[in-house]
Amino acid sequence: MGEAGICKIKSEFVLPEQSRQLALECVSEKDKLKLTEDENGAPPEKKQKLSKSQKKKLRGQNKSRGPTFRCSRETELCNTLVDLGIDDEIPKCERKNCQFLHDIEEYLKIKPQDIGETCYNYETFGKCSRGLACRFGSSHITPEGRNKVNLEKSVERSQTKNQLTHDLQISLRKRTYNFDFAESLIKYNDKQNKKTDAKTSGAITDEDLIKLIQREKKKIDWRDKLVLSPLTTVGNLPFRRICKEFGADVTCGEMAMCSSLLQGAPQEWALVKRHSTENIFGVQLCANNPHLLTRCGQVLQQEADIDFIDLNLGCPIELVYKEGGGCGLLRRQRVLESCIKNLSQILTIPMTVKTRTGVYNNEKLAHVLAPKFKEWGASLVTIHGRSREQRYTRSADWDYIRQVGQAASPLPVLGNGDVLSYEDYKIARETCPELAGIMIGRGALIKPWIFTEIKEQKLWDISSSERFDVLKKYANYGLEHWGSDNKGVENTRRFMLEWLSFLHRYVPVGLLEQPPQKINERPPFYKGRDDLETLMASTSASDWVKISEMLLGPVPENFQFLPKHKANSYK
Image (cartoon, rainbow, N blue to C red; front, side, top):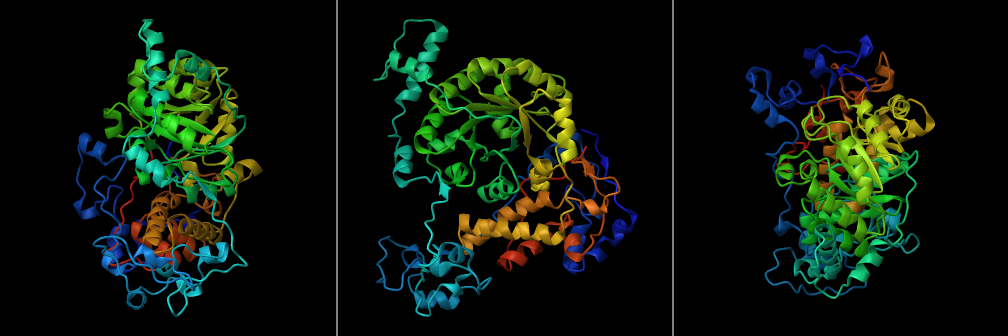
């Protein structure tokens, strides 16, 4: 797919490093130092030679991040009063020692100024669920502090599926959810493996389990599908909606930890949520043993609307790996076999696997394991053409991806790695004709319109205003998903900034000497064809914040942002 190097830009747009600040006229004096920071965050005068172990620690994630924003309960309105209709009487708060405000008039006096005059949720659905707390509330809050409803535009807000219900959360937290089927299945399979006469416990009989295993599964036609990779943090529901609109055929939620799902954690169940536009949608699970995976498979199949479940064998994060999950399962093949067999057998939907080439560069495992995945019950395998050791610092090995595709046949295989243009896609398909389809990860983060480019077989020189419209749409989808109150606005901002840490790496087609852009090529400092294009090319987080302020208003006092992912992964 091409080696890493320097992205060649037309000479009239290239800037000397010392001129970079001049190109970004909107950048203040206090931010100029940040523009000359190196990729590890150290100003030039403080650069020092790093040891190999120090460099390793700087890769991957920024682990010392603090929260970007904290809501003060003393200045926020109690939820009992937020959605107060015109004819509603003021209810009494039943919470003991509630710290939120209960005086509507006082709240409206101290409430921050509205960000905009039009509320997207009110205009779209005829009602804003954040009511009096909405930061765009002037269009639907009466002078008396009531939340208006536009019956002519009233739309049922059921576009997001797989909400965690209160009853399910309680049963998971109190451990009263019935997992007899999952546990009996594991014991039955252990018994089959050991060929002993031990009997399964509980009310589930061997006959029931055999019928369960022999059920016909739903099928997905993976041929020629463009699949959006499960992307931690940035692959949220609003981002997936953007990708669907640009032509993604299959979407998958962010990696969810089974242990947290089984504890009823709302933040983990949020990763299972599905928008109605996601016509083929899956959930990716991560765990280190079959008990967690099989229980999760049972509860998701019974309680959620999903089309497939993917097992993560590629997560390189140290904590996950050391616990035996993600890439760690590749080194525990007996446990891996039990995980895939039990999870696939409890499901009536397809169970898929996403893996890397192996743990180490010189010890590739995927071509050996792929045929076994089919035997164990997987319906599809996705191969990311790098090892855990490589992370994202080498080009994906598509020759090896083809080897896996050949070894896995007739199991469908998706290839994944370094696809950033239709040309990359075409080369991948020609290099690996055995593949069922292509999965796209970082390429979609850098330019989500890649799905349109591939389907229309073109290179799109998208303008800065069109790119800004995409961000505006994302902001609206975020306000719909996370809410339009202070917390929702700042959640939307935070995830937008995480996305901008990738999005800024896009180099406009019209500036390139030799299009298309390659994913591992680092561009020189350059200016755009207009101020907005120049701003969008900035590698400084302070400029990403400025872009967010154009859509979501000024950041709160003491706001700070450090991206989770260190996105500048070049060879």
